[in-house]
Image (cartoon, rainbow, N blue to C red; front, side, top):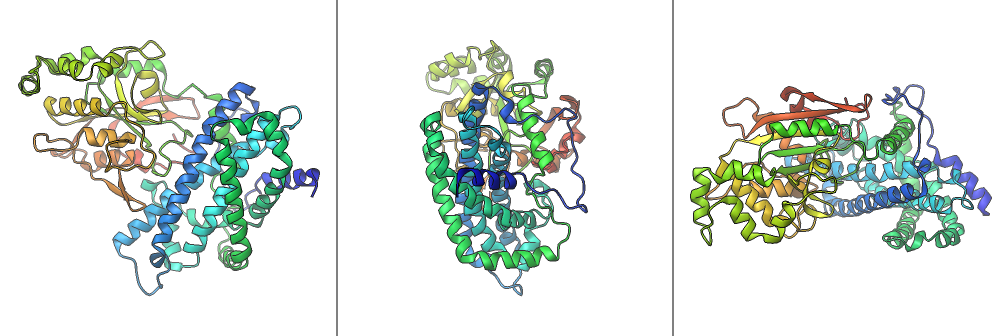
Length: 534
């Protein structure tokens, strides 16, 4: 097939079909005209593409890991209808599906953001065209390679499909998520787009090379994975396609409310891309709001944070993706702990018998203390310890608090416990980020793991008792769980947190408002991918 027909077929398929008339309209939150990623200048576009490449890598790695996890439990997925699942088995199945769904949606958002690459001429804008194809087709190949196997494993089992189609807000699962997932991976248009894209890949290779995109870090691995995923998906379609498609058609015949686009409709996806482009570097929480919030905060506070459409903690579903430990400035630390009798007595027992807590930190961690007492790129003092992709880092207001949603909780523990927690956090500072979410290793840490281990109860420390949960069979702690614990214990004498503040983002207005504890309590039930976040 020549390049021209390939282009025509791809362009026809790239725009997803409209919803059926019976489908409910998708809410829109931004009145301004859509503006896609290709409207960025070349430098900004490449920077965004590199970030999305990293997002796609983590999403597809998660898909592969979770598909393998599901296959290890094959007997559970193929259980007869007459044998009901136990609560533990249901939790494993739902959490694995929720994590898989989260990774799948993350890849799909990247794919939809770049799907109009054919409208960008390869002759005049080769970099944008090349990046757009790689991210679009790389995402699609991974979705189908892993998605077809998962759909084949879980589909056709009435008991299981009912379970996977139930709404579970805490996990970010909307109703009928599994039905819509099946429809996507078993859609003839999606499969045709895979075959067409594979043909276009060979045609486009000289453009990729000439544009220098193949020399970008991570792109050779993406290109190799794309080819392997395409081959695996094509093979499964040839072997199992007729059976899977027939089963899917039977399901859809009985479900007239099914939407043709998964998981975000076209208008939503466009608005998401528009939001990210228009608000690049402009979080909903204003700098003045963040600075004013500092007046209420104290060393040892726990922060939960969220930026809309910034795909972090892929595979840990839930509205709140991030947690941080607030330590304040060195002056704040000294004021909070250096004169406290319990802290002073404890510090006196430490090696070298330091006089103060801050003195102990400075002497024990001289390099870290020198970094901590410096400034961030905006000239602000460093006040927060958080685990981000660069590792466990000291950050300031602009990075840690200027987000779209921010909740601040105060642990109901002694100043001594807070000092011990901060000391532990200093110990972890500088260690790499844990993309595997392995809570049983201290060598790498995910964001919630930093907070959880800093406040972990010990023989000489009350700490915080925040139970880990099983996600896809792995013990971990989504940030959502911190808010869930706060909600469950709210108002009780034994509660572990006091409410400090909540800045609630409003996409439609482009700002954030200060909200109360009642509003904050239920945020963990908000859908991660819900467009109507108010």
